[in-house]
Image (cartoon, rainbow, N blue to C red; front, top):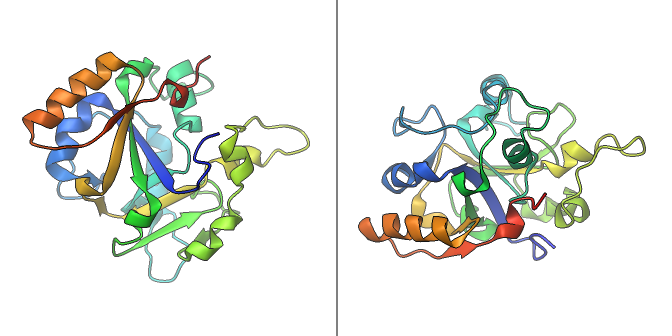
Length: 213
C-alpha cells in the first residue's frame, strides 16, 4: 500500500530540475526565485486555472500562489506523463526522467501557511482545510490502493484521488525528507548532484511509485 501511515506527501518534477531546486527550494511559478530554465512536466492549462481559483479559507489567497503536493506518488498526472493517456498537452516521458520529492506532512505544517483538500484543489466541490484533524476527510482507501478508475457507481473517484497538500509560495529544500527515483542509474546520477552541492539526502529506488504497466 502507498502512504499507509498517512505521513507523506509527494511532488513530481523532471530529474533535470534538481540543481535548481537545491538553489531555490521548491517554489511556485510566480516566485522571484522561479527559474526560466525549470523544465515543466505538468498540464499548463491546469496550472493557469489555479491563478484565479480562490482558496476556501479566509485570507488564504489563490491556489496558484501555493506549491502543491499529492498524498500519493502515483498521481493521475504521473500516469498521464508516463503513458501519454488522455492528455495531448502533456509530453510523454520515460520513468527515468521523473523525480519524486517526498516530504513529511508533519514538517510542512511547520511552515507559515498551508492547507489541504479532499480532492483536486481547483474543483468547485472540493473542500479546503488547515486543520490536521480533518485529514480523515480524505479518501485514504483509494489512495492506498492507487485506485482512481472512474466508474458508473463512483464517477467522483478521480477527483477524490487527487487530494492535495499545498504550501504557500515556497518549500525550502531542507524540508525534503527524501528523493525517490525509478532505478539505480538515476539514483547514481542524482547522488552526484547532491554531493557536488554538499547535500546529504537519501535517494530511494522505488519502481513501485512509477506505474509498472
